[in-house]
Length: 331
Image (cartoon, rainbow, N blue to C red; front, side, top):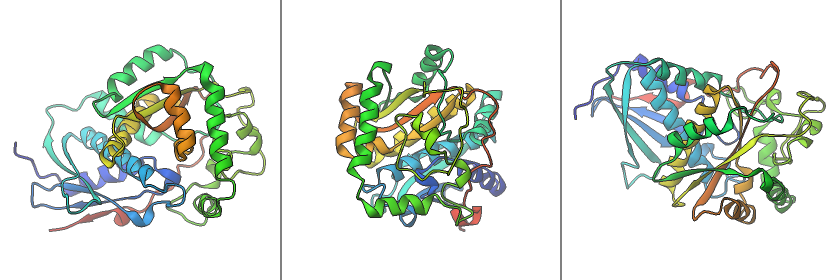
């Protein structure tokens, strides 16, 4: 199959939109290189200098983050009329080279393609408690059709197992209670010292709000006061688990792609989401999740999905690095 040369402005716009993808602590551990040798391929690289190494000791969450930006780029290019053809880990001599994408023109851009790209702009992490998501079974059916694959499996933690999941969350916190580098890293990524990375104070919640989310990351920095969404006394979110049948780098990358698809599906269904990675950062708590899903697979990431009642202002979008820091064109 021959691939077309895509206008550089189209690629720039798509990469800029793709970089709205979620990443651990908004670390954005990726960079893109564009060349014209093979029909103007776009290459995705892992940027190790941007990985939070004390939170994500194995680099697993960085791979998931890069998978999310890869799927976001595919969505952004489709909305612009280009079908992406992805080769993962194309260079065995460079483990940081995660994917190469070439493009062919699409016959027609549907409203669905455009709505999915718009969902990238609308999606944000909501750490407040959720009400029960409406029409859950219908949404779940659509989601499993989208996200399940030969690599990744989507499961729902049954409501009756919520106490065990909360215990796994508390266990993670207790096991890292005296981990000074970890706590320093949390603080370092959740202050307003930077303008293009990290989690701004406006995106944090108060201790009172955090108490109503039993499976949230309780050792996360908090704002001093606030009691938003007070009508939701306890979190009634459904909890999804994305697991992979292998636990290697390609499986993690593909899990990130499935994470992107899941978050965009939820956003298009007017549902709020909050990605949870702390529960799978520690082997003991990760094992609890494995037991709860009762599947021979490695749990990678959890997602709270629910309804955010009212018209709470999500605040300004979390910052992203300037395009010239993440995208480079070569001859």
